[in-house]
Structures are given as C-alpha cells and as structure tokens.
Length: 385
Image (cartoon, rainbow, N blue to C red; front, top):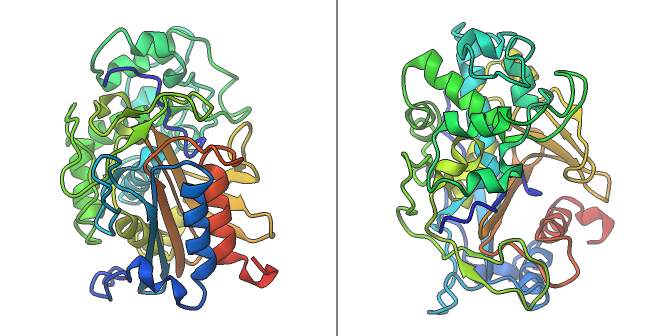
C-alpha cells in the first residue's frame, strides 16, 4: 500500500523490568473482576457503537497485568485479538527515540544544546537554518520545521523514502515560526533526531533502540523495522483504514503491510501492549534515565492544535483528563492502528490501548474519545465512572 496519506501525530495522533517475570495477563473473561467492568464496557461500546474492528487494552497495576478485548483481529476469520498481538505504534516511537537521545546526552556523547548543523551540517537548508535549531527544540517540537507528512503530494512521488528525502520535503517549505518561539507538531523533528543518533553512534537507529531499550527491558515484541520491510513479524491483528475519510460508508482497506520508511524515527515502530506498559512503567519510574535527564524529558511546554488538555516534554506528553487527573505517556496514529499508552507519573499504574481501525462512527472524536473514556474508567473511578 503506497498511498502516503497516513499520519503519525501522537494520537491526533538496574532492576528487573516490571512484569518481566510476573503473571500473564488475565483474559477478557476476567472482566467481572472488581475495577475492570467499566473498562470492558468501553471496549464493547467501541466496537458496537463506534464501528471499530477490534480493540485491546492491557492495564497494569505494579507488576500485575489485566488484558481485555472486544471485536476481532481479522474481519475475514473473526479471530479475537490477543495479549501477544503486535501492532504499529505510530508516534509512540518518538518516546523511544527521545530516550536514546537522552541516554547519549547522559553519556556526554551529545548535548541537547547542540545545533542541528553540529551533527548534520547542511541538512537543514533553504528556508530553514540548522544553526538556529538545537536538539531540545527537535524533541519538544519547538523548532518550527515544516512537518513533511503534511505534503502528501511529495510523499506520493516515491514508493519508498530515505530519512534525507523526508527532510528534503520539509526544507522545501517555509518554517512555521522562528525556532523556539512557538509549538507545532512536526514529524520532521524526529527524523532529524534519528539521523543525529546514527551520526553520534555510528550505528543504525534500530540497533540503538534494541540494544539500549528493547533487550535490557525484555521488550521482545518491540522493534523498529529495517529499511522498507512492510511486514509485522510475529503474531498480529490485521490493520484496517478508511484513509482518514469520515462516515460509516467510507471504504475500508487492509493496511497491515505497508512501507514504514515513510515514518521511520517519527512513527515506524512495532510493539505490544504489554511491552509498552513495561517500557513506560520503567521510564516514568526513573529506571531508564538518570535524574537530570529525567527532568529534561518531563519538562513540558504548552501545545497547540493537538490533543486536548495536553503538554509536551521530550518525546512524552501529559494529558489532563476531564476528572482533573493528569496522566503521562504518548499516543500514536497511522494507517489502521491507533494507540495510547498513558499512566501515573510514577509508572506504577499504566494503561495501553490499541484499535486496529483508524475511525470511530459512534460520536467519539476519532478513537481518541474511546481512549479518553478508558483512561477515565481507570484513573477516575472516584468520580463514579
């Protein structure tokens, strides 16, 4: 599938890692357990009223996980989604990339104040000044660099893309604002961050993510595909898209196999709900980054035209729920797969949800309304939800 109309917009979108040797997730039939009925109810509504093919969620309290699902993994066979399902995580990839950058900063191999020109001389040119953009601005989306995925016509000119070609699309457009003066979500920022990781380490970004995060924390279903590999390796659901057309009558396409080079560091990764809960639990709990880099990551700036009631740090975001509780994590959206992974600031409670369709016909604002209801059901129980 080569229509590059997908977006990866964040949902608009040591110690032994928690859960590495814990209990296996309970099946959805355990939804009668205290505290999970409301969550299971939201899952069923997402399918029955929202028209989504399938939805899964893993809730983790400490090391104890609970898994729930509704709908199907494959509309042809009718099979159910499982805890082992791998799916494309879109912009949640940005959290992994930012974590690697912050680890390199902790090791003294780069500085967040380094300019783009310091590591990628001449890559930002034309309308953009690489001497005026630093790594911190890339990670918190204050660079003003044009978002290459907004130029669908340019993306569709080629079947596959290199990181350099994606940046070239961005630099053919003027910046949104002077670097550091405002906020705008741009996937180009993370393509540049990924390129900087490769320049600083001499290794592929995919290898750095595996060696620094996936392997040490037991994330066996988490990886960045190499090159243009279109497949999802391991167990997975089908991914269904309406190409972001609205309305129940829009045709549905199977987007399970696609070229991830269009997204790469900005949103090309694959993972599971359990892996994401484990990763964010460790990250929020301070088990991946040293305290000074942890502070850098979770120092936020206001957002604009993005997720409601959100602030953005370095590859992570906070979202204030309608009940007043603030959760931390990241979201991701692209062809046929929307995901949220958010939890308490200490990482002890996590919720990761994925839908294998990129629409909702039930009055929610895309699947984000479903995700918000699930977070409310978990974190706002005192409000009667």
